[in-house]
Each structure stands twice: as structure tokens, then as C-alpha cells.
Length: 396
Ligand SMILES: Cc1ncc(COP(=O)(O)O)c(C=O)c1O
Image (tube, rainbow, N blue to C red; front, side, top):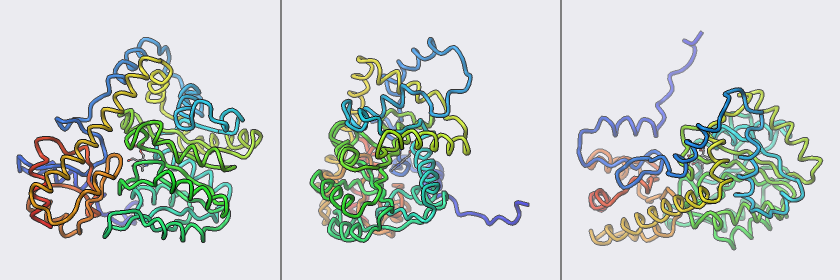
């Protein structure tokens, strides 16, 4: 049976990790996979998470299934984190939500739900967008279109072109927006640009699909929620896929949230039943562990404070690394202005160099990142930043 299947090319990011592991150069640098790393290159368990694990170990008395929607405490805490404690849409009982297996799981079940609503709907994604959006949304059966987003020549958002494209989106189509810390470019909309997106969404009556995978990694937990809250509070319908992989460091526990803001409370109930039925048809119930940990952290005042300061520390470290890289590039006489790296947000930056230059970085200097020139800023540290800057200047 399986002989009919074609051999697939290896996943570019996983292939890159394998090549990095096999490289014997002691000065090799991995800026590929999107996970946070500390100064020693480790992806640590957050202290708040380690404490929550101890509490959970004491508290948990059964491994029976959790409900299809997941831990209600997790869902409520996450919705308050994303939408604000006193969010009018929460007060009006207009938000359906389920715990999902990671942000990926959330993106997928929301896409399946959209197919149930309208199997002809188009989803507009930014050009470029996170590579996995395409299979996650496309495999559900939705058509994908792109809107212009980033200009590599000027290292900035093509906002006018984006707005022109959004003006042509039809009523009932879906527009995927990165809530903050755009992956792969690190280029985020300003608050004024979010305001303009809201106006277009009202005018064209499209459905915003917000992907929030890096809350807290841009300007802070509150500031990063500006776009999400703006659209949620001012439009009749919005859907949100959130992830706790990065800001809680819970990657392997697969914990995310799928939320649907509906026009009224009655439709909320219908949407809640439908999204649970979608999940039931794919994996039945979400894994419990990660959601239980997040619930413990967000429900406990002192653990929550500790977690917030850990998120702040990760964000500040990445901002420092951005500044360090820009400074080292200048010191090494780069004839290209890389100051845009300082303005970009979150874990990623597009270095805006050519695929040939990226390959030269890999082949000659053992610096590994994807051909698009997206680098994981958290892969930089005090030790390797000098080597990285020299290599980059030499391939320019
Ligand atoms: C933009 C974006 N959305 C969603 C996700 C999903 O993350 P996960 O499924 O690991 O929670 C990621 C992870 O890299 C991402 O970068």
C-alpha cells in the first residue's frame, strides 16, 4: 500500500538541525529552530513551571480523561490574559474556547471549524508567514491567498500594499494576522496600523484569525495584546489561536488555546459545541499536563508574578542580543545598515540577505539558519555574537 507514496524532501528546519549536529566546527552557531535559549544555549524549564509541577504532582489524583474542552480554569485564565480581565466580550459571554494541543492544534481545529461554516472560504495570510500555517490551514481544506507584508529591500512592513490587498478581501473571507512578534520577520504592526486594520475589517466584513504564539516577547504581556484586544472588542466575530509553548517554555507539553468570539451568547454556545465536536473527531481530548500547569501559575498571585518576571527576562535578553548584534556588525564594518534588527520584535529577525549568502554562512562559517534569512535571536549569546557578526560581514 505505502509504495504509492512519494518520498518527501526533508523538512528544511529539521534538516538544518541535523546538519548542525553533524558539523564538527567547535564555533558552530545554530539560529534555526524557534525555541528560546539561554546564555548557555539551553532551553530551560522556567522556575514558575518547575514550582507548578511540584504542586501538580501533589494535587493530581487521577489520570482519567479530562473533558473535551480541557481544563476550564486554564481556558478562563488564558482568555483573561489575552483579552484582559474585564474584557467586554468575556463579560457578555461571547467567547467559546477549548484547550488545544499546542498553537498548531488550535490553528488546525479552528480551520476545521471554518470549513464547517463555509468550505469555500479563503484564508489570507501574510507574505511571508510562518511556513507551518500553510499545511495547518490548507490541509483542513481552506484555500490560501497571500497579502503583501514585508519588503526585504527596505526591511520594513509594506503597509500600504497590505491595506490595498485587504481592501479587496471579500465578506466572509478570513485574514490571518500575527498577534505580535511576527514569525518569520519580527516586523510588527504599530498600534496605529492595527487601528487601520480594524477599520478595513469593519468595512470589508472579513473575519480576523489571530495567531498569538509569542505574547510577552515583543513589548510586554499587556502591550503585545493591543491588536488582539482591539479587534476582539470592536468586531462581532474574531477567532484566536494561542500557544503557551514559548512564553511558558512548555513546548513538548503541547498546550494552546482555540477561542471563538461570537456575535452573541447564543451563538457562543453553538460554537462551543461545534469546536468540541471538531476536536472530538481528531484527538478527542487535549493532553492535560501543560494546561494544568498554566492554570496553576496564572491562578496563584506569587507564581504568576514569578512567571511574568521570567517572561520579562526572556524578552529583555532578546532585546539586548539584538542590540549586541547590531553593534558588533557596525564594529566589524558592515556596509549594510542592520539597525532594523533593533526595531524587530520577539524571537525572530529577517536579516534580509540572499539565500546564497545564507548558504555561504552555513558552508563557510558553520552558522545555521533558514534560506529566507530568518534567525532565532535567542540562539545568539555573548560568546558567539562576535563570530556571527564577522561571518555576516564577510558574506555581504
Ligand atoms: C507563528 C506561530 N504560530 C503558532 C505556533 C505554534 O506553536 P506550538 O504548536 O508549538 O504551540 C508557532 C510555533 O513556532 C508559531 O511560530
